[in-house]
Image (cartoon, rainbow, N blue to C red; front, side, top):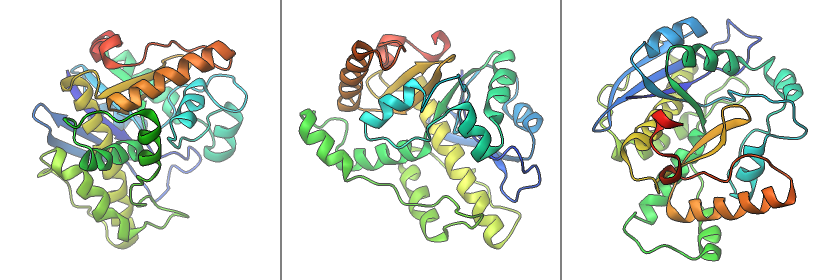
Length: 275
């Protein structure tokens, strides 16, 4: 199964927006194979292709009728992971709709496994693992939470249509130890437009590296929260994050706050083709 990451331009009201979507492929051995910049959903689906892939997208792919936020965002809040609270009204007000829903359906119809990812969380986990390598002994939950709160990836995503140039190189540097990025593209545009493309590629490659991690890494290095109906979010993880997620999911289920399954870790779910 291939690993693909997608940065999806969020505003459905601006087909002519300066920002573009990006599709990144990551082969076995964590080699970036290709990145394509896209304007339409049809271009994105065509860029993903037909061979089965785990496709992770940095946008909501399910927008159920809920109040406040989806079950996955309830859990993420207790994990100190920032996530946009998804409801139909909020998606309409902020983005003019939810283009990820139709995109997910089109990709699933071609036989791909599709889920959401949070590029900032992928970069944050990469920073965490620089300080806490996987072979370090696990921390107790209090020490883990205190240390996790101090880890923040560099801001690089555009605001008000303007890119944050200073954050692009540090964000990309977090991905470089994890993959061969020789195929990283240069934008054919200049100035802020080139920086917008670079930010999109960072997001897409972060999603692709996480997809590859789900395919190749042990099940205690990635986790899935939620399901395709309620919203399924994939996280780059460590045993501490998974233990903390289990604790909060069980508590929130007992309280009746959420109804999603308590099964989250890769070891529980099996490989992506079984999701």
